[in-house]
Structures are given as C-alpha cells and as structure tokens.
Length: 418
Picture 1 (cartoon, rainbow, N blue to C red):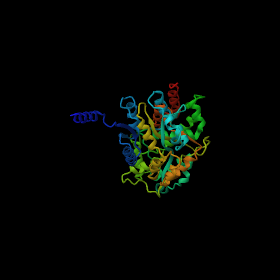
Picture 2 (picture 1 turned 45 degrees about the vertical axis):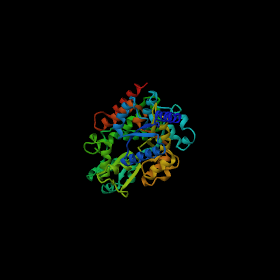
Picture 3 (picture 1 turned 135 degrees about the vertical axis):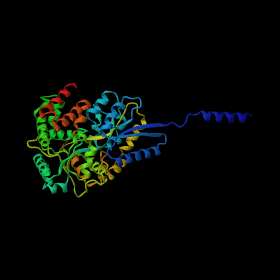
Picture 4 (picture 1 turned 30 degrees about the vertical axis):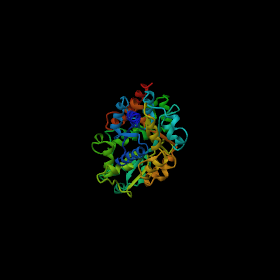
C-alpha cells in the first residue's frame, strides 16, 4: 500500500512539473534577395537544432515596406527582438527612445574581436553597442558594357562627371536608355545627390553641417551638388515613369538589358539578377562597375565613398537567446558561408576572403582601401531629416523644386532637430 502511494505521489509530482521552457526569437529582416532570405532561415534552423528550447518567428519585408512596418512594430508589446539596421541617426533615435538593448558587455572580447572594429563602432552610440554588424556596403556606378559599346562610350570615360554626362548624351542619341532609377522609393535618387555632395565637399562639408557650423546643408558645397544633379536631370536620363518605379523594378530593367547605367549599392550585383525576367541578369562579360564619378574641383579623396554598415540591433526586452543567436549569425564561419554564396561583403574579419563573385571581390577590395565611408544620408540624418533629404532629391528630379531649395529644405529640417 505504501509503495503504491509513493508511486502515485511521484507520478503526480512529475506530471505537475512545468513543460520544457520555450523561447521564441522574433527576427525582422529587410530582404535583399530571396536567396539570401532562404539562407538566413536555414541559419536559424541550424541554431534551433543546437538549441531545442528556441523557436523563431521570422518576418521578411523589402526596404521601404520594412521601414514603414518597423516604426509601428517597435511601439508594440510584441516588438521584434532582432531588427535589420543601416545604423546612423535612425539607430541613434531608437536608442534615445529607449527601444534598444545595450549589449556592450555581451559583445566585448572574442565576439567583438572577430568583427571589423569600424563596423562594430557603426552600431554603437556614445560608446555603447546595440547590435552586431553583418556586412558592409558601398555605392558605385554599374554599367552594361555591350550597351555602352553600341553608343560608342568607353567605360573609363565614366570616371568623371563630365565624361558620364557625355555618355548619357551618346546613349540617348543611340536610342538607349541611359539610367534606371527607383524614384518611387526616393532613396535611390538621394544616393546620386549624396554621392555628389561627398565628391564636391568631402568629409568636412558633411561633418560641418552635422555640427551646425556655417551655412550647413544650405551652404555652397551642397548647392553645387544640387546644380550638378540638375545637369544630369536636364538630360532626361531616367526611364519613362521612373517616379512610379521601385528600386527592385529599376534593378530588373537593368538586369533585362534595357538600361545602360545605374547608381546603386553593391547589393545591386545580386538584385539586378534576381529582379530580371530570366533570373540571369546582365552576363558577366558585359557587367561592370566603377567608383562614383569625380567632379571638377571636388574636395573629396578619390577613394572616399558613400556606403554603410548593415546588421541587426537587439531591442529592449529581447531574451538572452536573441543575443546568443546574433553572435552565431555574425560568427566567422557563418559569415564565410554568406561570402562564398555571394550574398554580401561580410563584416567578420577575414570572411571576405571567401568571396567567389568577381565583382563583389573587387568592390570589397576597393572598400577596404576607402579613405572615408559616408553613411547614407537618409540613415545618418535620422528618420525625419533623412526623409526630407530623400524627398528633395525626388522633387528636384521631377522639377518640383530648384537646386537652391534642396539644401535650404534639408537645413530647415535639421534646425528643427535641435
């Protein structure tokens, strides 16, 4: 009787024990290509297999819809634990709003040592770290060699602004569309204006404007950049209806061989292929790139570039497992996988050696030698002013405003951020 009672008591105790604890990591990704997203899901699956108490809730959206959804998601009780970031002022605003988690103590040591130091600093604010970098980017001028040849344009002539303008004239005369641009998203147009601003004024112009010294964004360097952009706009370089096309649609037009040129970040190497009708893109033999053209009298070093560091931030209240997964995702072994598959230029030290794609290897080498990398304006200036920077580039491109109004509008918005 005693034995039966003891067995019954033990059975009751076992059945009343809590089930094996489960932790769900909510991961919000801004998609670059479907192939990259498939790989990211596989990385999560492998982590889950090694950590059976972890589950993933992964949400994927493209650039602009992602940014719009993130703003509301961060305010909810079910906010994602890991969020894609371009760093800069947008991240700073998220820190100031108390939306991010300080992981400085977790990342220091071997984890931080395995990453590019500058990339880690890009996801830091006032000496504290809020995320981990996964890859680095750079804006370049991409071209279709076959279409240039049909118009009698030598690729090397694109190294200067005047040479590129002449190429646009020749392409139009030959009946070839010079540029495609995702004007609906606006930031692709701002990439051109920001790159011109860097070429004209160099690092010092932007840093002086940030410090609110002199005339800021309403100064002569930014006015000159707007005037140069207007030179290009006056040649009608973009596809018909460009203000209604998204960045992926513009990439597909280039990938389909209908457009000769595009200014875009190095992710374009993949998106022009995945967005093309045949999923092949421009043949390697015809596909080339150059740094953004130099301008007459510009103060930038020839190897100054617009670009950035991308990665994932940890939000406030995220479980420790989310930080541990981020460590796994940004580890050298996993980042080498991404490099081997040509998804991006990794921020993990030495992982870039695994890059197989010729063009990404070339861009990675150029980026490693850059004297200065200017973070994208729409990210560095924060959500409000960054939006104005994008809007003014699009408005200038369609003639709604003049070059002189561009810098004034950005400076007015920047003054309101005091």
